[in-house]
Length: 417
Ligand SMILES: *Cc1c(COP(=O)(O)O)cnc(C)c1O
Image 1: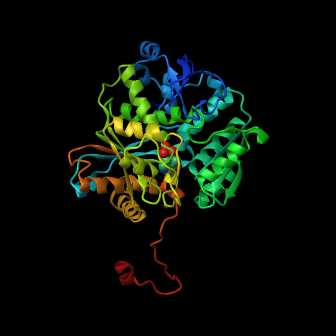
Image 2 (image 1 turned 60 degrees about the vertical axis):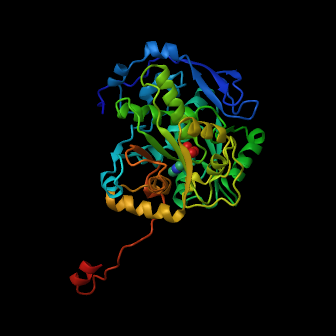
Image 3 (image 1 turned 90 degrees about the vertical axis):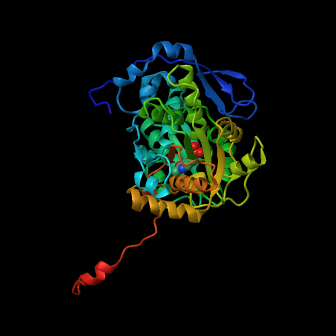
C-alpha cells in the first residue's frame, strides 16, 4: 500500500460531460442539483473517457495514497474543497483458504468492506453524494435507511456541516439507530419498511427543503460504489475474479461495479472479460430473484419482507432493471438463501477464518455453498464475496459461559465447556 508520504490526487481535472437517464438515454447537464430523470429512473454520470485515457495511467496510481479518492479522474467531484475525508481506505481482500479447502472449490476471496468509515461500504456512496451535495450548495439532506447508509450520511454530513434527517424502519439494528443519532442526524424510527420511510422523505421534500439521498434517487452514490470495482481490479493487478457474489438490496454496488468494469475497459486498463455477477438476496425478501427467474426486466414489490440481513431487506428497488441487466449481461444469476443458512455461514466464517462477517456478507457465503451444490458455480471458478459491513454492528448469539470467582475454579469443567 502506498505510504502517507505519497500525494493525494487533489489537483486533477474532472472529466464529467453530462448525466444520462439509465432507462431512456436522455442527456442532462451535469453540475445541477437533480434526483431522478423525467422518466423517474436513475441518472448515470458520463465522462469523456477518451480524455481520461490520455490523462490517467496505472502509473499515476503508484504515487497516490491508499484511499478511494485515488481514482479521482473517474469521479465527478470538481473541487477538492468539496471532499470530506474520514479515512476512505482501500479495503483488504482476504483469501478464505480454510473454507476453500472444506468446500473443495476454487479460490474464495472476501472483500472486507467493514474497514470503511462508519463500518460499512455505504461510506463509499455517501462520501461521493455528500461531496457533490456540498459542491452544489445543499444545506439539508434526508434518507430512508436500514441502518448503514444513515450512519454514513450522518457522519459525512456532520463533517460537511449539512443538516441531516434520517428515517429508519423499526427493525433497524439498534446500534445503527443509536449511531446515527449520536453522529448528530435527526433520527426517526418508523413503524414501517424502508419503502414506507422513503415515502416520508419524498413527501417532505418541498416543506422541509431537503435533498433526497435515497438509494439511486441521486446520481452520485453509484459513482462512490463504483470505486469497489476499480479498487478490486487494481488489487488483483487488473484481472477480475470469475464470479462476484453481491448481497443485493438497492443494487448500487452491483450496478456501480458493472459501470466501473465498462469504464476500465474504455480507458484500456482491462479487456472485455467480466466476472459473472450474482445478486444474492434473502428468501424472505427476494424481488430480484423472482424477476430473474421469471425473465422479467422489472421486479414486483415484495410483500411482507423479512430477513435478519437488514441491508438486503429492500422490497422494491428503483434500479431493478439495472441490476437485472448487469446480471444477465454478465452471464450470472440471482439467488436467495434462507436466514438459517445465513446463520450457519456467519458462524462458519467466524470460527474457520477469523472473519466476523455481517449477515449480508454471510449470505454471500451461504449462496456460494448453495450454488456449488446446484452446479451454477463451478468448482474451478474463483469467487469474490462481499462483506459489506463490520459484523460488530449486528446482534450475535452469545455462547459464552459464566464463572463464579467466589468459588474454587473447576478446571475440569472449563476444559469440557
Ligand atoms: C446497503 C447494504 C447492502 C445492499 O447494498 P446495495 O448496494 O444497496 O444493494 C448489503 N449489505 C449491507 C450491510 C448494507 O448496508
